[in-house]
Structure formats: structure tokens, C-alpha cells
Image 1 (cartoon, helix red, strand yellow):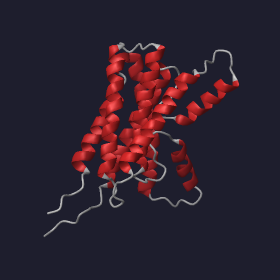
Image 2: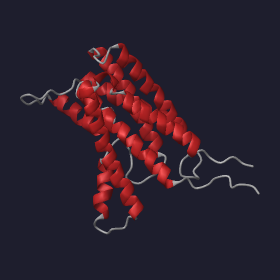
Image 3: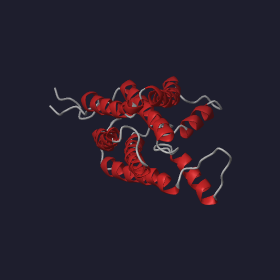
Length: 237
């Protein structure tokens, strides 16, 4: 008897992978903000605000606004990542819950992660300003590709690289309580995962500075490996 061409993906596995990616992006933002010039590589809203402050020349005692080039390095890298990720996933089939092209896009995002690690270790975790800009561009690219891949999944309120939409959906649901228990659990898990990732990234910078960027790299590799083996489309018989 022939198997169906596509089968529903286990939502529990999908949600677990989304939470893992959110932990990764939380760690990335914490590490990049603390170690790479107070710039985000996943949270572009903050970078746009920083860019506006820099253009306005606004400042406050004890507050250092990142430089324009540093901000743009992360933003341009993110934009390029979104573009590449979208090119990969846009031709994916619409059926099913997790397209193989989503896995491919996440797999490609491992490359800038690996480039970041190689350069970070080469500089012993103490990059110059010029190298910092390259690192921001690499991580921005990785986060952009991740965002494009997750967007293809069409999971409401889940972007893995920002929490604003998730909070809007969670709080908005309180007005009519329309979401299912599974939906609320998923959204709450994403918020907790972002917090956990930022916490882990901060702790690693303090206690194992040189190895801090290994966490998001390892998580992304684990997600890609799991998706490729567990969530792959069934073969025709």
C-alpha cells in the first residue's frame, strides 16, 4: 500500500525546534550587544532606533550609541540573509508543516555561523573594530536567513528573532481567549526561550568568553540535523 506523498509534521517537534532557534537568537543578541559594540544582530528594531539616535546626534551621560558603520554592518548582513533565505524557501511546496527548503535555508545559515566562529577564535574573542563589523555582518546574515526560513512556516506570532509580535498575540488573545492551549503554550515557550538564550549568552561571556558563540552555532546545527532526519518528507513507495 502506497504512503501518502505528504504527512502532517508532528507539531511538538516543530515547536521544539522553533524554541531552540529562539534560544539561539537570544544568545546571539546578548553576545553581539555585550561583546560587539552594543549592536544587535537579530533584533533590527533596536538597531534602527540606534541609527536614528546616531543621525540625530543624541547622547546622554554614560551612554554610548554605536557607530553608523557598526549598525549598518548588522543591518545589511541581516537584509542579505533574508534575501538569500527567501530565495531558498519561496519555491517550496505549500503543503505540509515543515518544508524541506526550510531545512535547507537553516542549513545554509550555518555557514555564516561557522565563519563567525572561525574569525572569533582567530582573534581570541577580542576583535578589532574592523573585524567586529565583519562579525556583525556574518551573524546578521545568519539571523536573516533564520528569520526568512521561520517566516515560511506561517506560525502566528513566532519569528524566533524578535518578541514583539509574540507579546502582541499573547496579550491580544486575553481579550477573547480564542487561542488553543497548544497555541498559548507555544507562544509562552518562545518568550521563555528568548529569555533563556539571552541569559545563557550573557553567562557564557562572563565565565567562558571565548566559547560563547559556540552555543548558537551548536543549536542551529542540532536543529538542522533534527529537521533533516525527523521532519523530512516521506518518500513515495
